[in-house]
Length: 210
Image (cartoon, rainbow, N blue to C red; front, side, top):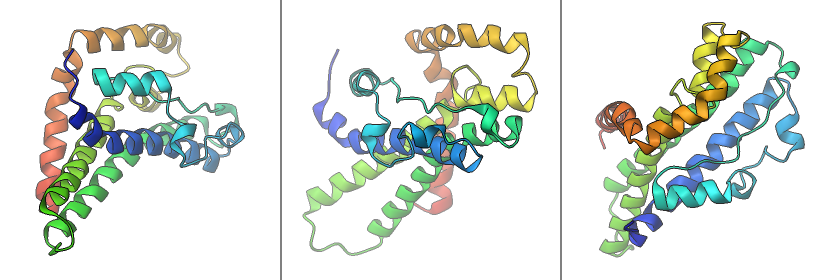
């Protein structure tokens, strides 16, 4: 396994920001919807240490896939179980999309502003970090929308179809992690989410003129 230390350092901010704010968004929306579980468990925080799983984070850096600590919620506390579960689930991916847009805007501002106080190499490095952050968060956005348990997309997809309370969903849920790992190991995940990631990335850059 070849480990590119420079690439790890360039991607580190995007990974930390993306994972932390993704989970924070789940926690915040859950609290808004009436469930105080994330607050009681210390997940209503912007501190990365509240959200990063050491093993999952390490694997992301060296293997390209991993995980954060999932935010626990109690659907019984929601005002509307079906609606609020979907809102909580979609909050994470939408946060990643917003992060991508935010850093693209920063890139556009920097590219159009004379930066005379920064060395050229440092300027380029900052732009690389921002671009990686955009890409990583688009990856998190698309990946988490896959309708495979325990990803957010499964809550959204099966919730909209009204299947979350059906035995069919629980059968899929018990096999979801195995299916997901199989897709990752066989590299089929990249083939599935690669095209939409590229489309979103290019579309956002074109739309924002970056």
